[in-house]
Image (tube, rainbow, N blue to C red):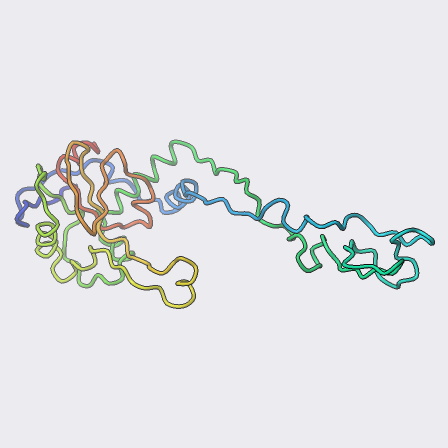
Length: 255
């Protein structure tokens, strides 16, 4: 499989043979499995003592002549805490149980999380599927609904070295390569509608372009995700069809 190499000026420079991983049959099911297994879960649960800090406990006795008993009161045996008493008369409020106000939660989430295991062959196949999808226009068009009349050859490859590459130069390259669709490659940050703003999720942003470079290449760009070949994970490539730009040196290392 061949692909065009673009110079820093955005002009076609030459053609190269892509590594064999780009010819892999795309397995969306395996990629999803690895993505779910590799996902970072933030543990969340209530305190184990929540709703259990009351003086009420156990079953209240209904035997006759027993101190603080419920005999003759016509009330259930639910645990109760005494709010006040006058002699042998008590004012109780239900506590501890899940039906009571301020009681414990039923089947609350546990802080323990069992990791999902996935074997190495599936991990490799998932990563290869992620790379192969970046070279297939049908997967890219499926992921980016804003792409219209795609005539670009994927993946986009930039000739090395690119040490002095600036964000402005990268935008010019994308304008020449993608045409009117270059805005899809830029991350867009918008204000989330609705009550999400009250929960610390005020902004949401699109993924934009993924820039894959060699660890030896030092590049810092704004508005673009830059990853070295040894830093790539399935989270960078999933959902499949990420708009990706590779450097020539990065492709040599991916072989």
